[in-house]
Image 1 (cartoon, helix red, strand yellow):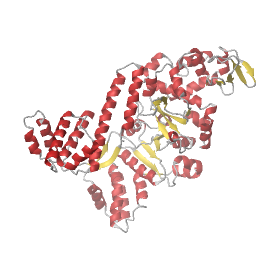
Image 2 (image 1 turned 90 degrees about the vertical axis):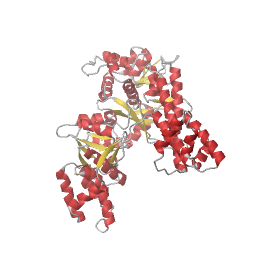
Image 3 (image 1 turned 45 degrees about the horizontal axis):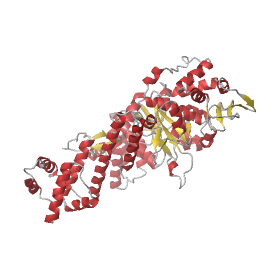
Image 4 (image 1 turned 90 degrees about the horizontal axis):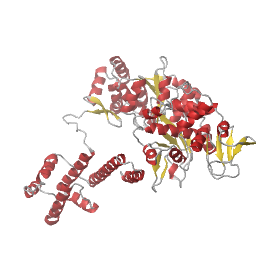
Length: 607
């Protein structure tokens, strides 16, 4: 089951008339263009169920039930989606093996359960795009010059209001907890379970194998002051076991399948609409970042399918700056990188729709990232007249220069800069080297930070657990209390109590000393002497030895940051515990209650 799945389902649907399917179970009477029947989904005496041969949908004008031929079979016969598809295929004498469409139970078990749910949701969203309630969304896409072919090629859908997806998936036998964990529903502020997406255009996100990992929903309705719920342009599936924004690129599956010996590069753009517009110009080997920086995982994914990357971002300052950072990271990982010099303030989508001839000229002209960077930065610095600006100009180029690993390319650009700056190649090389004695590319778990200097004589701290971090934050804050009476006063005002009992007891002791002795700081050796026969002595001695040789600048803002971080850490520990509890219970009511508690805790983070 992959992205082709939806297209194959659509092909089956096209070959079977919904009138024939419904007519097997209900007595249909033709009136005008539509067929009518007594609705089986409510107590109906007069025919109120309309079946449209033109639109290939049914709708009851009394109870509101509606759908396509698959949904009719699911609701009428109380079967799952796979079973409904197989029945339609049998009726239409369609060979599923020739379609390479395997709908057996073994197929379900191979896939991650969230992927199965996402495929069902995708089918639902795509059907909804064909209904009357999606008319405004369809018109919006039309105004953006998105054609029906684009809608089908990219599997675009529509998320209606009124929790229709939630009810649809429940009808397939899925529990509310499963739908929540898959990111297809959420718990609202008033503790109600509701659809994650509503009244939005849906962009499905596929992995390299064409499996649906999640969705991005675009708002197409102008927001108002009284309706903040639709103010965000895009809303994504929340982080799940399979949906990680830092690992996902939009249109990855299509781009991979469009590569060939002659066409072996990937275009990297910023937005979904950029990808779709480029496809209208025959450029299908295109992927988009999903509102994130380029990460280590993105780079590893790109490595699997291509070594040539063409960066095509917005033409504004932010777009050019981002292009240089992305190019630096890719060059450092041995990609062949080119940049399209977008000299407009438009993104690729806007450019194609407003100035196609300029786009066609631009797309044929690519630059090496270093040329692109020189062109960009020389407009910002008057380096021929000012030595300080010359230094700044070269400083801006250093990361990119150091990312170039080919000695021939390195020499080429040293010669080019020699002509531009009147510095010798040796001087230039020395300048770039002296900006940082040695550079390394530091890849964090989320983003690739471009070329941070390696600090000398400083050990890299090992990764610590959440529990260890929680304790270390408390210990550091406690040490601040020893150093400064003002820290003690801040904690008193905040009515802070240390979660760790040992630190709580020490805090009480210090409180007494500050009250009685009217001092500005605590004599650490004196405190140790007082506690030398106490079981807490070793713990206190370890804190003092750990921190006493370090220089500290204590301020109110720093203390407040510690308090916030300790509270966030405490919440994270509770969330982790709730997650374990959810995994260890099969009781639906308990799972929902735990999820609600988790939602409340997440809302308290970073406040």
